[in-house]
Length: 258
Length: 369
Ligand SMILES: Nc1ncnc2c1ncn2[C@@H]1O[C@H](COP(=O)(O)OP(=O)(O)O)[C@@H](O)[C@H]1O
Ligand SMILES: [Mg+2]
Image 1 (cartoon, rainbow over the protein chains, first blue to last red):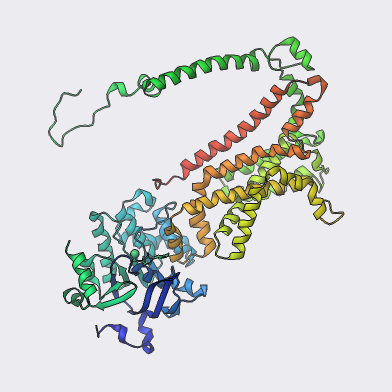
Image 2 (cartoon, chains in turn brown, green):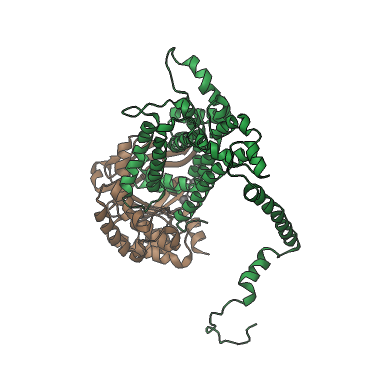
């Protein structure tokens, strides 16, 4: 655990894309995130795992302010998340997010889904946005579906469109919230392949996922959360072979042995 | 029925059995499928047999289409006396609008149809210019109908008949939709003042009968307004009808907004879209699509509620009709009058209803569960 960047100090903040310090969050009286400290280096791939309800989604949703934290600080690419809407906009422009249930816009074609944010947030001309969108659709291997509506695609295809849609904004960080857990088994691989390719290209990624194979091949660091706390974090090799904490051992035995 | 045996993987596509397609199969499946169904079919056919010939007889075969009075009609035929409608047709259509100026109403109606084309038909050529024209239409219509700026001024007291229905209906429909959208969004707003205002507005206007609002418009407003201000009665009615329909519209649209999965709002937020952009491009197109049946329902309700203005002395088609029945030449012809007015309303409302079905089909994108 000692060699994780988390222990380096705040004065060299520049190299971290995400800095979270002493962050707490409550839902009403319910203390859902407790004293979260996390620094993410540029290009780092982090996998977050933990039992259901442990606050994984809440944590990554705090990073693009889909949820508000009440204490501590979150700094994304040098911008601190506060009530200032300007800052929130700046951060959201740089952070892409992929959801469990895809959340594509069903009334727009695949291509329009991809060009919407570049056109309206980045103010790109439509032609240019469409060229970029086609490039990314090419990369997730569904350029031929560009003029279809999301409802006409399979789950795996929809999730790949969702990834392409986020990439079209050229984000510095990508957040994934259980991107494969709503998919049928035969479609999981096609989505993971896209994510692995993205990882090899050097994208900074935070993935909530239970795909331990993915964690082993791609992650620089695995974080284990339980009841709103970061219990343990380590390189994947160490994390799986030599878990320190009892709760981690229990969790790993549950997901690996069935 | 097919005796051939095919090897696994080699079974060809075969046509369906002949007793499951064609007209006889249709009758069997739809009219005679069960004892209850047979009874219902027989009863319906008997009912139609009783109703249709009698109606045709009264309305057409034994009807009088010309004549100067009810008695002349009766002398000619025992059924309907359409001569009455014929003589009063202009009154039904234009109200008391000066006869020399009626071309202005015709022109306005023509322009209305012209303005509706680009609004209702998304593949209309030059749609962009058409939409600009549609936005300008209310001002052109106001000028044509009221006069001034070179046209003879006409007082709104002289408005009446179907023309009055259309003025109130079209105004109410075109303003209640945007106001309703704003109220529905306001009701969901994070800003407490906006939310309280929207809820208060909606609950107030939905909680009182339209008739009381019309009475307030016609009489009580005079107490509140500063002395000496004149404030056109028709304008007051238009405002009340619009606000009343807006409250209903807001609730219909709120239903649509709530039917959207939270993920749609979140995806829009996560992309960094601003509030109004995400409403305009993501949320409202979907919410309005879901709400189409409710929206059209509200439109139709509003349109038919325009007949209530008779209570405060405006002469809509029913008002014109009642006034005409008071004429001794034509007393007792209320069947003809009400049927005629009913047909007018039915055509308009049925049109709206069919258009909404067309729109629902057109907007389907394979996402429906
Ligand atoms: N909007 C909310 N209001 C109240 N409690 C919530 C809300 N969202 C999540 N929670 C609770 O917070 C906890 C953490 O949720 P979540 O971050 O979604 O967990 P995970 O993604 O790890 O399964 C859960 O106990 C959940 O019930
Ligand atoms: Mg979750």
